[in-house]
Image (cartoon, rainbow, N blue to C red):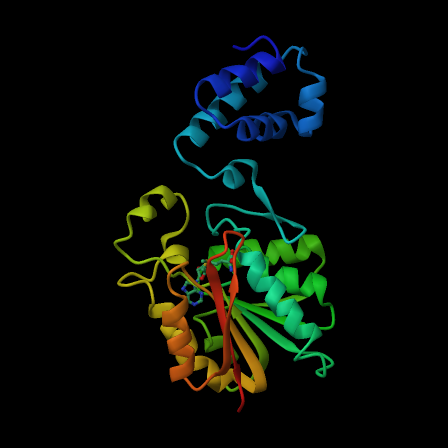
Amino acid sequence: MSATVGHALAAAIGQGLDRLDAQLLLGHVLARPRAWLIAHDGDPLPAASAEAFARLCARRSAGEPLAYLVGEREFHGLTLQVTPAVLVPRPDTETLVDWALALLAGDLADRSAPAVVDLGTGSGAIALAVAHRHPAARVEAVDASAPALAVARANGQRLGLPVTWHHGSWFEPLAGRRVDLVLSNPPYIAGDDPHLDALRHEPAMALTPGGDGLDSLRWLAAHAPAHLAPGGWLLLEHGWDQADTVATLLHDAGFGEVQHRQDLAGHRRCTGGRWSG
Ligand SMILES: C[S@@+](CC[C@H](N)C(=O)[O-])C[C@H]1O[C@@H](n2cnc3c(N)ncnc32)[C@H](O)[C@@H]1O
């Protein structure tokens, strides 16, 4: 058992845990912000808290994402609850949201209540961020995983953001309908990618469609034209090295104005195109 807050943190860091992770985990156990931990370095740590902290540190060291251990992750200014049923939202995906918001304020600004759909919504991150930042949009979201959709729906309710949630595969719940903006961060890692092992705590169906990793992107590019209103846009997130392939998929499907957006590391992480109808 560690005697004080400071001792517990030092011990965890000494065992190889990242300093910020250790602070966030102990803050979670004590229900205190990081600033409190620093100010109360010498406070005694109750035995039950020390044991709970040690258990979380062991799980973090074994590779469980911090977001699952503390139950939440910030995305585009929103605090989202996350469980192992959903992919942990990544900062790179904010690039897709920023591009969507720019289109809603630009090319799509003439549509008073633009219809936006987020395919493969996971925690609801993209749909909720768009609904939050562009309240005039009518936002819908789809996921093939019922447990993931339950997390997304609960996030929507807790945040008071009006998104319509659908359980189904890609465009299936939109049968016979067209929207103004289709957004998706689909699974895109190749089935034999060695990085999948490090991501083993996240749902496999959120990470990879198997094979060369492109099946979901191929499906979305090929079927989006049947669900886009004239002048509507399809924006896709993809792997750092898939931009040229996705651009070809969009050209082949008949999209114009095909272009990319870069992630925080400068990789072309999103590719989109306009459907002229
Ligand atoms: C990479 S995750 C993205 C989650 C979330 N949009 C985000 O950016 O954090 C891909 C999501 O697609 C969902 N998915 C996989 N196959 C699907 C399908 N055929 N139809 C709908 N959703 C699917 C997974 O369940 C998962 O939630």
